[in-house]
Length: 344
Image (cartoon, rainbow, N blue to C red):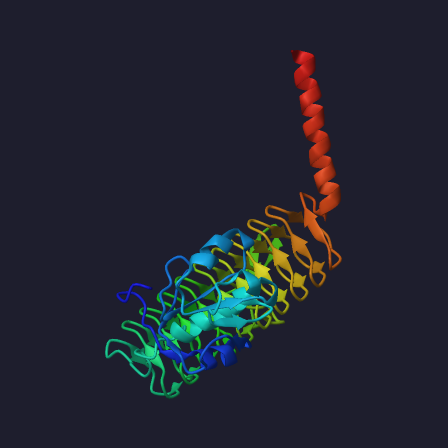
């Protein structure tokens, strides 16, 4: 059970409600049975729901005291006889959805609470159920949708638009940004500031006005201390459902497609374009004005100096197909062993 000092729990919910929310079929259980929390298999009690996906934990499944288990059809026979099962082809995403029922991103307790220590410009449009923390600044003509929250000391710049049920943590700055619904921004993120654009010359470097915006579509998650620059003319765009880790840098005019995953310390240079469902591992570097095709997967520390086709895995610097990169690494290891033997 999550520590109540830090997490506010919703519920309880019936198994029927959970099944409907996660798209599961209830098997061997009372639809009206209520559960009050989520928990791991080994710790779950009769009023908590758990999940099973990894065969490594089949012994924990056999011994669990959970009130219900979210499980795949292929694993049903491994569960204790008579246990209520929430059967779905995607048990882990199902568990995530169930957990969000109990622990939503925006706490119901905080809904509608605007701290007297916050500054909200009178021209701002704040919808019902919006929470704003102490020290936050909401500038002129900002619009914040129903059920969203803004953490302590965050600054929402003039004209920014925030959708419904968004969660903006403490010490975030937002400017020149249009945001969809259910977006999560973690502490310290900086979004919408100037892109790094200069006309360089022998007598100095002339700053180029950055006249674009940052457009963040629905269901995006942006990690702590990540920076996303606004466009120079075209917008910087983060596609629906993309997840961005901590300490990522996205330069001006970058276009990230739908469902992308960008891991910690990735740097993407200006005007690069990622297709849908691209995965970039930790510390990947992508040069400017490139295109990465749909479904491409880049191993950690891959350096990308040229366009990459979609649907493949890449590694190394410069980036090359994963199979080629692995062969090269194996060949280098063999050569090193031979050299060591010769010295011996």
